[in-house]
Amino acid sequence: MVTRVRQAYEEIIQHIEHVIENSDIAQRRKPVILAASKAQGVAAIYEAIDAGIRDFGENKVQEALDKWPEIKENHPHVHLHLIGALQSNKIAEAVTLFDIIQTVDRVKVADGVMREMQRQGRNVPCYIQVNIGDEPQKSGVPVAEASALIGHCRTLGMDIKGLMCVPPVGQHVAPHFALLANIAAAHGISGLSMGMSDDYETAIRMGSTCVRLGRVLFGERM
Ligand SMILES: *Cc1c(COP(=O)(O)O)cnc(C)c1O
Image 1 (tube, protein in one colour):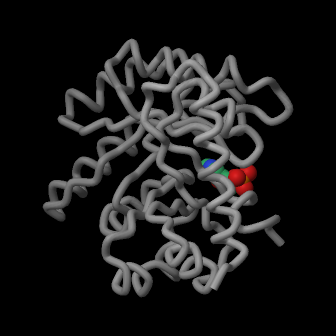
Image 2 (image 1 turned 90 degrees about the vertical axis):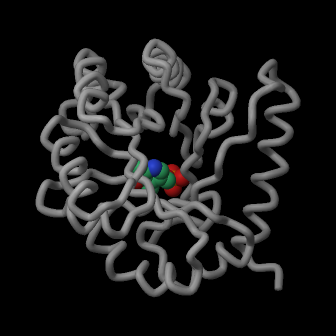
């Protein structure tokens, strides 16, 4: 059955191939397409898995706990990423459930995640979220403190897979993506989780390795 999600996914794959062919980053690997499934029911997530999507992102630990244990049992090969803010009191559950945590953004969270991984004997690759526009209300480590946090995480022995950002709404995104790529390069970090429905083409041109797509895959959220 050709579902809406499958059709959207296939169009996005073609579009990404087109973007890569028509830019000077032809040597780069295609980014992972992560389906941002917040506010989506389990049925829509199964449709996305049937369409071939293997990476999913949830924003809230509690919502993920409600939806994902059953899905993961049926589809153990799917990777679940945490892409929303991580509160200290949710760290233990997050380390148990998620395969990748993209939102380490302060020392307290880094320390807690490392402690839980050791306690649970589980290695969960982490990204550091950078508040790339230094917006007061947004999560992510401030740009000026990113290097220090990366250093702290490495001292702990944390496996930092990448950096992640959500740029300010209503601004040109390219300078923000370029800044994130620069910070990553300066620290020898290869993963760049950047690009959402409205700006993933730009993010790919700037080196994204993981685009997080909600609306273009699932339709507008209710
Ligand atoms: C919701 C969300 C996305 C996807 O946003 P769309 O604009 O629907 O593609 C990506 N990243 C994060 C952190 C989100 O919360």
